[in-house]
Image 1 (tube, rainbow, N blue to C red):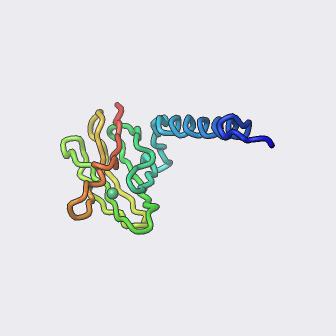
Image 2: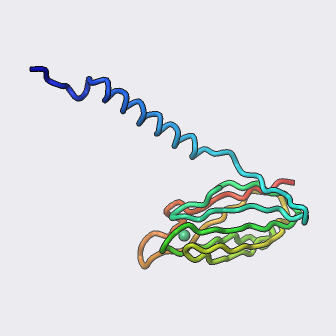
Length: 144
Ligand SMILES: [Cu+2]
């Protein structure tokens, strides 16, 4: 009678290799390149940001100063409401936009100056941590 040793079977090794490859792939996706907004025929910089619990995708968006921006905010959650807060009046941002579950809304603003600014979601449930504390924030990089 032959005993099968789980740790040494070729199938187990193969499965382990696939799992490791999968983890490497996820890590690479987490370090995604920043997304640069596209300037449309209307002269407006357009970009779409997907809201999920608890993330923005992309979480690093690059735009140009002095040109209007229109962001399309799409929530893919089935229950949880989120928002998009970008508040720095001196830099041209006073955005506090709710995005209900499954909804798509757009916001417009014109970045006044270069810099890196943080957008985030401040929703929270009772005494639990806010969505921002759970990692729901991103970077808006304004270039000259
Ligand atoms: Cu949220």
